[in-house]
Structures are given as C-alpha cells and as structure tokens.
Amino acid sequence: MENQPLSSFIKSMPKVELHVHLKGATRPETILALAKKNNVELPAKNLAEMAKWFEFKDFNNFIDIYSLNAACFAEPQDVEFAAREFLTEQARQNIVYTEVTYTINQRKMPFKPQLEALNRAKAWAEETYGISMNYVIDIPRNFENMNPSAFSTLFATHAVQGMGQGVVALGLAGKETKHSVSDFSDGFDIAKEAGLAIIPHAGEAAGPQSMLDAIEYCNPPRIGHGVRCVEDKNLMALLKERQIHLEISPTSNICLGIFDSMANHSFAEISAAGIPFSINSDDPPYFNTTLTDELIIVAERLGWSAEDVQAHMIKTAEATLLPEEQKAALINKIQS
Ligand SMILES: [Zn+2]
Image (tube, rainbow, N blue to C red; front, side, top):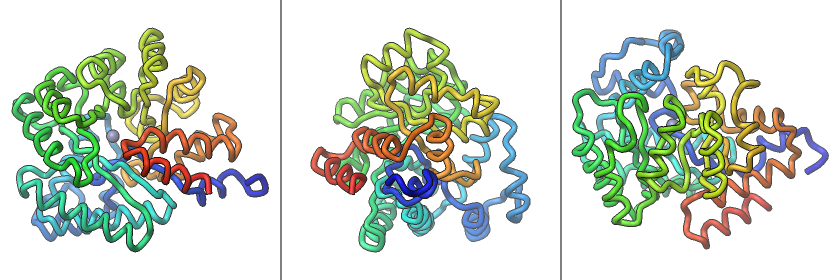
C-alpha cells in the first residue's frame, strides 16, 4: 500500500459509490443517439454543441438540461443500454458496488419494464465484471404544474413495488428551491409504512432549513449533498449526534456554483466535525469528472494516506443499504 502514489492506489482500489444518477451518468454520445432514435428535439446536435450546452448557468438551468436528456429514453432497451454503459464505466474504475439513483420515465413507459431492464443490466454486470448495483428511485420535483402529493404518491408506490427487486430507497431530487421537502410528505409516508429508506437531496441549492425539513419528514439514513449544513452549527451537531451520512459530490457543487472554489468547499469542515460522509460523482459527464477523480481531489486536500482512503471507503460501504451479510462481504472486498 505504501509504495505507490496515492492517485494510483485510489484508481485501483475497490470502491463504492452512493450518489450517482443513471441518467446523469449517460454519455453525451448516447444521449445524442437516443434523441435521434426516439425523435426528441435537443438544442445540441453534436458533441461540441453538447459540451457548450453543458455550461450551466445555475442549478435550475442544470435541472432543465438533465430533464430534457432524461426524456430521450423511450423504451426499456434504452434503459438497459444506458445501464450497461454505466456499469462498464463503474467496472473500469473498480467501483464494485453502486446505489444508483434512477428517475422513472413515467410518461413513456410503465415502471415494471424499466426495473426489469435495469435488472438485466445488473445481472450482466455481476456475471461479466463481478460488480453490482441497487436503486434509489427519486421523486423529481421539477415538473411544471405538478401536484406534489399525487406525484410523490405515484413515485413512492413504484419504489415500494420494487423492494426486493433492487430498490433500496426512495429519493427526492430536482429543484430544491421550487418545492420544499414537506410538500412530498404523502409519498414519504408510503415509503415509511413499507419500511423503505428515504434519501432526499437537501442542503445543496437550498440552505440548512431544507436539511432540517429532510430530517423531520424523511428520517433519512443519508442526505444527498447536505454541504450547506456548515451554515448552521446546531444542524451540524444534530448530524453528528444522529450520525446522518452526507453524500458529497465536490466538483458538482463547484460546477453548479454552490461554492466558488474547491478551497472554499465545506467538506474539510464536515470531516473535522465528525459528520459521516462519502465522496461521489453525482452526474459525471456533465461535470467532466469521475468518482476516482473526486476521491483524489478530497484525499489530497485532506492529506489522507492510502490507509485513510481505505478506512473512508469502508465507512462508505457501512453506509450502504445492503443487508448485513452482503455489507460484510463488500467490506471484505475493500480490505482485500
Ligand atoms: Zn444528485
């Protein structure tokens, strides 16, 4: 472990990722191909235009682009193709287990064939690469004129239907400033009733109150981002006391203007405060990053050794929603 540079160690070590969106991880080439196949009009016609289109103005602009890209998926085979590509990239980085966020395409396909398509890709990756994934089904809060109660009920019902078939949590993503966490409480009640964990995005585009709401309404084992907790010392104490895990994606936060530079990012303060956290890539091609790159950035800034990175990865594995036996096997894999 000691004789190789830290970046090589991070590249080759077995890794776990807890916060990455399948549709946000789809390569621009694939988005273009799906748009063409399914007759979806995009403002970008080639890779150069896609790169330009990905220069986000702000968080809400990013969500609009993400939503249009997600709309390029029209058939279960599109989902399976993108999932296979995603898992090939995870395998390339030696990411042995992922809890990937999947946004259901509720206009063009029923949920069941989408979940079956994901599970075909998962079985293929287990066989081909020896890696696996499970799903966080998110409630997207960015549709115009939606009724949050009806919307959250629909997505939560689907998520509960997928329990035992790979769905391990209900998520909440999209425009934090447009709808508060509490608007979706009907959906959360369905998940709670079924014993399904809830992992909302909060404390990213919106401040500490969004995280306090998330804790109140979702009782979350983890929060997506949560990086703005540093604006409220009482909230930080609460996160530490309850050991609520934050899924941090540093480059995403810089690209979307949550922090103006890596030096001013809150992960060092969160780490020093004893709040559990993991490092993640969120939507890697959008932010031109990978999980490996994110880990290298954080490890260098926090002065971690290879042993520290490995200890961090074991804590990340402990924060998965896997059954205890599978969790122990995953930790073994990281230690080997
Ligand atoms: Zn996210």
